[in-house]
Image 1 (cartoon, helix red, strand yellow):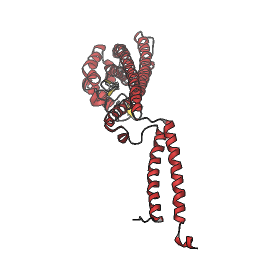
Image 2: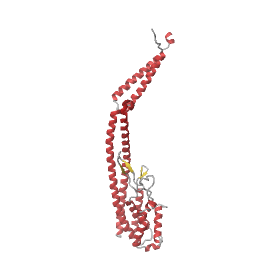
Image 3: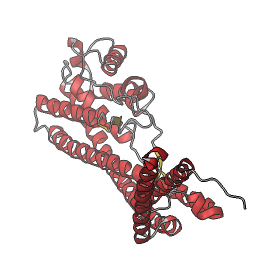
Image 4: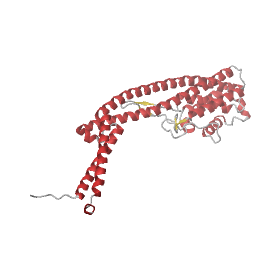
Length: 349
């Protein structure tokens, strides 16, 4: 008869291997109990893993778009609030111009109103949200509008140079009092309009781009989600406010001043309508983003349930398995300790 030798070392080593396996299974079971999902998708699903990976990828993409839409909605809300402020300021300015046109307002009152309009317009168009300028088009890291009243303003320097070049003297020269209404209209049409409604706007006033931010709001849908300071309504407001702010400081006569007021009234009236259109367009974009987010949330819920059906585990079964493995590990520790205490010398003694 052949006998196989048995040693306490062999038994101890065998228990150690069993303990390691039990600890690994316990770690996996505890993870499943904590997450509610299988610890190893490939091991649990086999060939079905590809479907889970595809569903998870689409789920994460949609969740990322929903998060992005939240930021877009915040930016659009700030934009809408800013447009409302500009609309209110322009209405106030228009009321002053109406009074001035009828001769019932003093020149300093008209100039003060124009200065207020210009300061508010500049401040609002330079508004930032989350570190990005919301009216800068795609140049979100650049302040879009030059401050006309600030020292060293390039826009003001270009405006004063245009006046000097057109008339041959400065606005403070006594000769400015002889400028007629027709001459002022000619100056506004030939020298001032190009600075605001032409290429001079980008050269001296604006660092914004005409191109607006285009954002993906669903997996297959994109839309413009910003407003540019280069909108014609903003330009007309700036022209009306800047011309009166600057030239009413000079020695212009009544005829030239009246021409400025009349032109400003026309510009602001047109700008009010343009800004109302911007508000309506922005509102439509807000609704579109909101609807897109709602549709995505429905899809996310469906994907989440499909993924859950594939990888979720029964919490009661997972708890039972963890308890069983904990008991097994504890028994293994106890047996290993008992075997380590076995000794021939201790037996003989």
